[in-house]
Every structure is written in C-alpha cells, then in structure tokens.
Length: 346
Image (cartoon, rainbow, N blue to C red):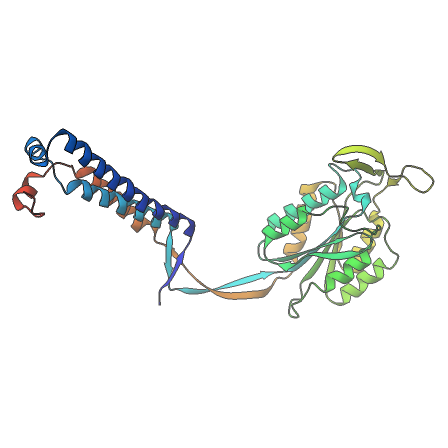
C-alpha cells in the first residue's frame, strides 16, 4: 500500500495566483476588444490580420497556468513510499543539572560561569546522536527545566533561557538536584543513567556526597564539571548590562567566590563518575563525550516509519514542458493546423 506525504504544504499558496492571473487575462481580452472596436469593426480586423488565431492566446494562458500549478506541486515535494523499516535508538539518559546561583555570575572565567556552563552543555548536545537529554536548574532549590527528550533543539532553547533570577532562594542545593534527577529516568529498562552536574561547587550542603552514593545504588553515574577558578572572583551586580556594584556580605565586604573542585570531585567519585575541569570548553566537551561513548548503550526506542522517496522531479519536468510549449506556441495561426481546421476557425 502506497503512502503519500507532502513535505512543504505552504507552497500550495502559489495556486492562488492562477485565478488572479485568469482575472488579469480576461480583463486584458476585454480591454483589447474594446480598443479594437474603437479602431474598426470585427470583420475589417479579421481581414487586416488574417493569420491571427482566436484560440492561441487562450491556449498559451492555459499552458502557463498548468506550468505554474506543476511548479507549485514540485515545491511542495510530494513523497511516496510503501517500504517500512525499523528505526532503533541506542544511547543513555543524560540529565544536565546546571547551577544558576548568583555565584555563577562571577567573571573569573569568561564570559561568566553561567554562560560558560551553557556553552559546555550546548556543545555537548551537538555531539550527541541517540541519547535522551533532560535539564534541571538549581540554586537554593532545584526544579525541572526540560523533561527527558530526544528533541535537542528544544534542549538548546531551554538551556539559553537559564538565568540566576529563576530561583529566589540562594545556595547550591546539589542534593535537591540529585534527588530531582532520579525522577527523570522514567524507563525501568534503561540502565545507562548519567547525571552531569555543572557548578562552581560553592555553598553546597554536607549531605551532597551521601545523596550521590544513594543515586549510585540506583544505577546513576554522576559526572561533575567545575566552572570557575580557585583564585575566584567578585560577583557583579548589573542592571540592563551596566555594572552597578559588587555583591557584599553582611559586614559590607565584597564577596569573593571560588571554585570548590574538591566537593565536585567527591560527588563524582561517590557515584562512580568523574570530575572534569570546565575551564577549556573544547577539552571539557571532548572529555565528556568520550566518557559517554564508553558507556554501554541500550535500545530504548523503536518505531516503524515509511521510507519516503521524493516525487518533485516529475512535476518539475511537467512545469518545464508546459513552459516550453508556451514558448513554442505562437499567437498566429499555424499553417498545417489551419488546413486541418481543428478548432473550426473561419
């Protein structure tokens, strides 16, 4: 059984131009007749133009309209297929937990820690193929940003929407992020579960390591990526991109935020994962994708799809044929056709 599919239906709008052209054509015919009647009567005009065909102009309009219609259908690109094939997806369930606390605004790593985190995750997504992804944002608490999906385009959109104003409570609730990530792995048979925590590791709770160990028991590997420097940096307070001040503590002293790599390393080791230095984007992405490629990938999705083949070429050929005929057909009478008198012209 053949299956038909139209790829770009929007181009059907070109068909609207055909009735518009018909109105223009009929208006032109009416105007010509009126102009000719002011010049001479019909019998005299026939005598003056004996080779002029009364049917050819209409034939040329029909050919041009058919060419336009065929071109419109070619642009729509009809597809036909009857062959069914099985598509298998193999990969891991990969959840990114991204720190959006105020300390991520520090610019000790360019352009700042949060934007660096977004770059790391975005470039990692570019390297994925069959894996499913999810996104969690966390600061003083954690909340889901994107449920587990294979839609990488949506993943990037949600990723770019992350900002430090998303969570009112401040801190770095890695424990909450780990607990929330557990709910993302909704496939019981999917054993390859990976949680990637991107953070500066600052203001963490003491039970983050314990939460990582519990996650490991449920088959979740945790990879941590540290963004920031051990020297640290100040936290700028900006309004509409203009620097207003720097964050200060209760004593009025400027806050210096530093990368806490040791905490992130402990969390990763507790969940049979690894810590990655995120200061060099390309190197970090390469290291992360290499780790992911080493994990055994299970099949988690299979579906039947039609193997469609393009059919636009037939309609494009028809459009070119109609245009060629339109060029070859002249408005004057053809000698041999005139002898046959197919259209009963006098």
